[in-house]
Image 1 (cartoon, rainbow, N blue to C red):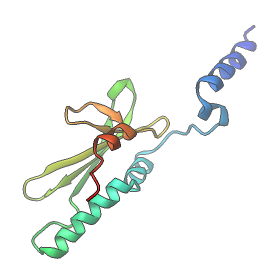
Image 2 (tube, one colour; image 1 turned 180 degrees about the horizontal axis):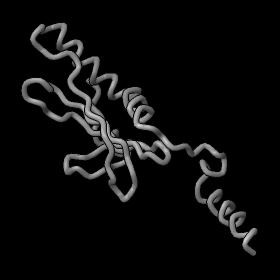
Image 3 (cartoon, rainbow, N blue to C red; image 1 turned 180 degrees about the vertical axis):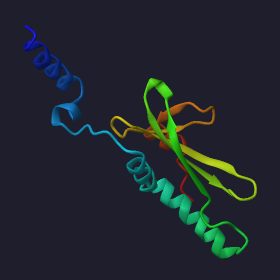
Length: 130
């Protein structure tokens, strides 16, 4: 019976989590989390906007600041990556991304500080086409 329990548990997890069944769940380091966030199209666009602003006005800061750390929202360890504009003068938070350390799932803090899934944040922040 003791030998059968791990097998049954693995079978149940494979039905609940296809990623577990395929063996693709992998813990994520803080450096990997930061790289994941920096690779997001929204972050790349924000950084490009900051660069263009700096090119247009030499007094404008180029990219803003990035602060990384760890937090425990939802009772699980997450790596946080926060972006600020004007870090040297009057920092204003643009966004905080949370990467779950156990599997790399991405969340973004909403205005109230509550983590929401990246896809939900994207839907809420879609800019209308000009």
